[in-house]
Length: 100
Image (cartoon, rainbow, N blue to C red; front, top):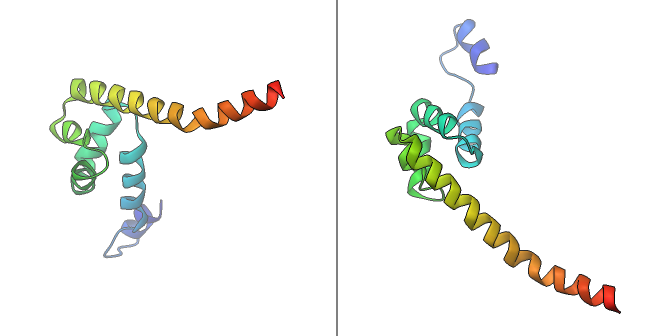
């Protein structure tokens, strides 16, 4: 809203928080259509994330929703595997406590 108010009142620049929000949504969004739209609106931010922590954004920059679907599914599988690994020690400790 701040950026829109700046434009309305004739300010020379937009609100600075928009790219930060775009980066957040480009990192966190799980919907192909939304990712494609964000990549169209914020191509520099999408390209930066695609080169680093979220390579599936290359598909978003191309508008490849089918590629995004498979990339998102792979991200989900990797996250679940990491979560299982993380919780193994806790689960073992809880089992020991339960049987003690």
